[in-house]
Length: 242
Image (cartoon, rainbow, N blue to C red):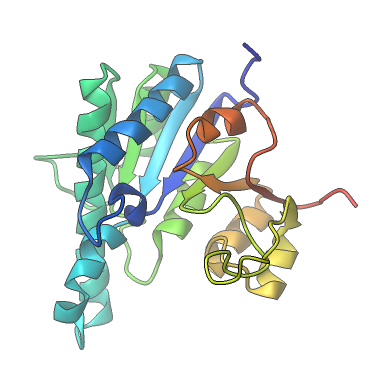
C-alpha cells in the first residue's frame, strides 16, 4: 500500500455527520462506520485527532433556545459536542482503538481537561484524541476550534468531513449543474464567501499556512484516500496551481 502522506491529522466532523438520515441525534451505525474509517487510518501509522460539532443535538433544541442569551446557548452547544465525542470514543474503543476525549470545559467525570502537551503525548502513543467543547469560549465555532487545535498539536492538515464531496460553485442539491472546485486559495474562499469553514477559521489557517481538504465523510474509503494523497474533495491552501 502507498505510504500515507501525513503523520498527524485533524479530522473535523459536523454533528450532522453522526445522525445519518435522521433529523437529530446519533445514528449508531453511522458512528460505527466513521470509527472504522478512522481506525483504518490509525492502523496505517497516522496520528488522528478529531473535532466534532454539536448541531445534531443542539439544533434539535433550537426552539427552546430562541431568545436565549447567546453565551448560554453556545455553552449548551459545547456540551452537545462532548456528547458526540463520547459517542465516537465508545465506537472506537469497541474496535479496540484506545481513545481519549479532551474537553475545553472541565468535566473530569467523563473527559480529561484539554492540555496541549497531554494531547500530543496521547497521539504519540497511538491513541485517537477527540477534542470536545470547542475552544471553551462562546462566540467561536467548532470550525475555529478545529483550526486552533490543529496548530496547537502541530497537525499537518485539517480534513473537513462533510455530507458533500467538496466545495461547489453552488449548492449541488438544489443546483445539479454546480461544479466542484478541485482546489481553492484561502483568499478565494474568503472573497467568494464559500461555505468551507467560517471566516475566523479560514483566516487562522491562512495566517499559519495550514492546508484544508474538504471531502465527503459518507463516501466509503474517502478518508484513507485523502490521507494517501490521492485526489479527493477540494483542497484549500495558500497557493494553487494555475
